[in-house]
Image (cartoon, rainbow, N blue to C red; front, top):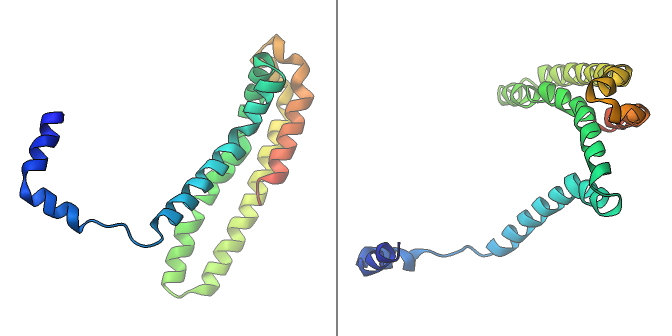
Length: 158
């Protein structure tokens, strides 16, 4: 690799190409803001894992991850329906058909609320079966699974 870099350095065209390269004004501010958003997103999604690991230990973290994996099915199902909304709206707005775009949006919101309610109720109703399938060590966590599903269902459509 060192020989390859030395070889590239000897080529005159490569050195001229490097002289033309520049970073636009405001580049580092943009990069900093983008990376800050990524860091905040990482901490907002996984900070609960770190806190539970530090406060309660590895055993409770395993219980939490198992239950949150079941409860996360609610936003996953919602994502399947929301992924079709943006292309539909983009096509309708590009064709300047705003009335149809409003109808598609209202239809998607109705379907999303219905799917969200159905999946939340399904996870809550089937929590005893899910906990039984997971094993006897999770038998006391059924109420927590119902609570997590309720919070996921209430917080997800927004």
